[in-house]
Length: 496
Image (cartoon, rainbow, N blue to C red; front, side):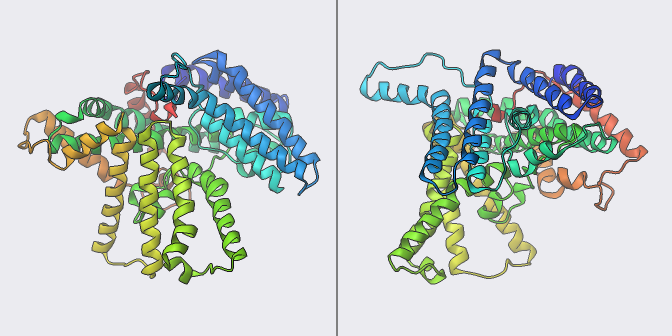
């Protein structure tokens, strides 16, 4: 079931909220059970065969969490239980998401004959698997106490973030669920949650979806694209991905707020970033946080301990040396970003995407180490920093979207003019498309983002207020969103 469908907007969501209001009058647990039931219906709408897999994952991870809590901290048995729980989650993820592609690759190279025909990947398996791995690690560290099965099940299965995130942590979302004594529909939550959801809906239906035909046609035959056409395709995909995924995050956060839960921020105007480090602190924040806490930080600490044990320095002077920089900066970043790339899929393009960003981050860190100082306040310098950062992101996004490395290189060749320099086309359709792209970049770089608009304590005429003008504006926007629904345009991150 899609957020941008009539079935969700006119059927599922109103029934869910009405049922929540009714069950909340009975008890908090009745409300929790209702939301779990609705979430399972939402998840099983596409293919109900995967509902038992989801419930099995929930039950297994809950049992492992209980076992971790009962074992002595620091004991070898507890360490093995944590490792076994994480390993079981990763094994399920690999089996469902990667095994078919790996077997196909082995068959291509070595003729093994081992193939999986038309494998079905459960929706959201990457997201709910990473969510539960994070909980196991928090339990092992003593950060998050064990919760009731009812609270844990709702935390994992709650439908707004189940399929495409944001990736939740027990420290924020599960704590809200467990500590909530009374469930009810708050007028403030409905107003603010509805506003956030509406902004996300408009991003998806009016800004992202119209770009899809241009992007699909361009990446289907990149060799035929001349200079201007190649740039149009690349820029269109960059905008499509931004508005599609940030729109989904807005709708997920808004839907959760309608039910009284506050999800963490997942986007913070990433295309305004002035360096790649800043970009990854703004783009898909929940995924960045997960990889930083579970991969980058432990690996960095392991390197530091090894160097300390061997009498090697750990300060900035050591980082300026080739060996120190490679060990303390390049290695953790390379492994982390390589895994982050592969997380999106088993294709070589995803690995190259991750390694490209690893290279960007390495250069960024090298510049920070060798040229420390505050960012320049000059406007021209800030514009140049944003442009350079975005250019790097754009190049990597071409690799990310391309069906193969050959297609990615072909499109990049077109952007370099190697497929010809086409004369400007002044046809009305082309001018409209160019004006549309310019308008989208204006929104990205100069307009306030969702959280700034819906900040009830913010200032300015674009900040939301419970007023008649805003009610009229939201009503008109709702009408536009409903009229723009196609009902079949899936979110780009559904494939991950």
